[in-house]
Structure formats: C-alpha cells, structure tokens
Image (tube, rainbow, N blue to C red; front, side):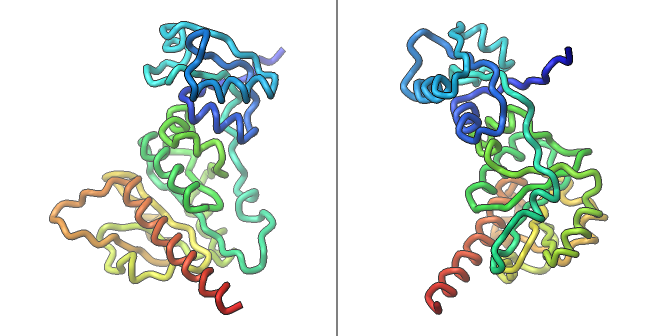
Length: 258
C-alpha cells in the first residue's frame, strides 16, 4: 500500500485557516495541554466538528513533531500543499469587466519573504500567484506560518518556465509589469488598472535578466533616503497596494457613473 505524503502545519493561524479553507486532508491535530488556551479552543472545536482526531501532547513532543519552537501549542498532520494549475488561474470563469490581477515571483528564495508576499496578495485580492519550479521558495509549513495562514486560501501555481508563462499571459491581454530599482518609470506614474501581472524579484538579485527583458515595462518605487531600504516583501506590498488603490478608485468612479 502506497504511503500517504504528509506535512506538519504548525501555528494557530495556519492550522485554523487550513481547516476553514478545506483544501487539505487532515490526518491528526496535536495540541499542547489538556485545556487549550482560548485561541486554541476554536481550532479544537472546528476540528471536532470535522471529525478530525485531536491528540494532546507535551510541549517537547510538539517541538519534535513540528521541528519548530514557534508552534504556538498546535500542529497538524495534513496532505501536501494543493497547488493550482496555471490554467486554473487564467481560465477560471470571470465577469466581462473583471481585470486580471496576478503576482509573479521570480528568484524569491526566502520563505519569510514568500509568506509575507502571499499575505499581502490575499489582502489585495490577487487572482493568483505564479512561481517557478527552480530557484524559488516552496509553499512549506514555514511559509504558511509566515503568511499567518493566508497561503491556505490563495491560488498558487508552479511553472517550469517563467518566460514562456509570461508569453502566454501576454496572449491573454495581460500587461507584465516588472519591479526594478533602476527603472526610470515611477510606480506612482504607472497605470495599473488594466489586466496586470506584477513581477517581484528576489532580495539582492531582483528579477532575472531574461524575465526582465520580457516585461512590458519596468517600474521603481521612489525613495528619499540614500540607501535602498526595502526588502522584496515590503517592496512587493507597496506595489500591490498601489495597484489595489488605483483599481478600487476606478471601480468607485464606475459605480458613481452607473
């Protein structure tokens, strides 16, 4: 019999959000103490409602099970992260006036940056996140923890070739907007209302040259200080929220006209 693949989620938000999302299979939940704290009791109640076994363990046991000191008193044995397919993201049913809003991550290797970017992406309503199979952080339990459980709700696809993916997105009428600290065009002078895919590069390395070459245009974030002080996740958040602001403003104007 083939052994089932499992991951160990840990932390209150990742476990709770995964339970709510319903996209993973839960095998068992581990809780420290006979009487869990108030925040943990919600996890336990939801698990019991879904008929998932809940096992009481000691703190040292949970550290061993999760491999982390930051488990917050709860862990869960679950099925691996459910990737979305590229076509699931770009071909899903959408209204005629709905513009694509995608996030492409190139060279993002740090799990905490990935988690932070995912958390922001969920907040601004990104339709999907696309990462390459190679030279990229994977959506591990550590990323779910860094995203405060947001990873459990987003559509995230992994592709073999980012440049080919960009070409397919262009065929869909999606503008590819790359972030580059040396770009002459300012974020705040850019139109991000149309169907766009924002490309965020890794810390230090940025977007790979061939990916950059295939972007429709590059933008930079104006900064007053002499030092480039924004890391990948913060820079990505600034750009995503500016796009969100523009799109919300455009929607509000359209509704007033109607």
